[in-house]
Image (cartoon, rainbow, N blue to C red):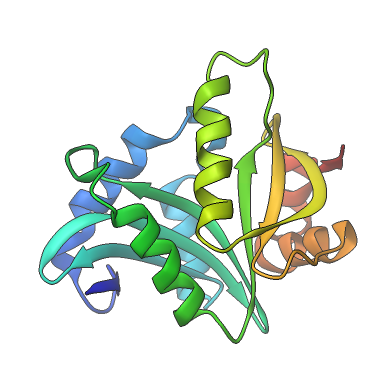
Length: 181
């Protein structure tokens, strides 16, 4: 069974695996400093979790959380565990665990000219297959164009930016400089 273990308070033994996968899986320009995320976690605004199947580490999920909203900030399955159904099982577990919240996913916008165009199409199809819906919203954040998905397909750009501001603060939001597309 897929579980999310907080690496600060529940399963500290997964901490190094989470940090290593985080460093390997995401482009430099999209990563927040781990110290910053750990501070947000201390403030109750972020959850840094290991994804495990039983006692086996399979990936990471990092959530921004406040009130009735949670944003999947980072999701990655360990390379040796990919194509084993863990991604879909993790998304399904998120939908169950955060079912009482507005759950937001940011995915790279489909772009036929992008060097990873095939990966972007495959990822979007994966999320749609696993219960997420298009909101029709696109935003440029971290100098990257994202599409926003939710389980119900409902979200406003204003609510999205207000959530980022609530979690990250005005200074960080100014640095991220989110823009609707």
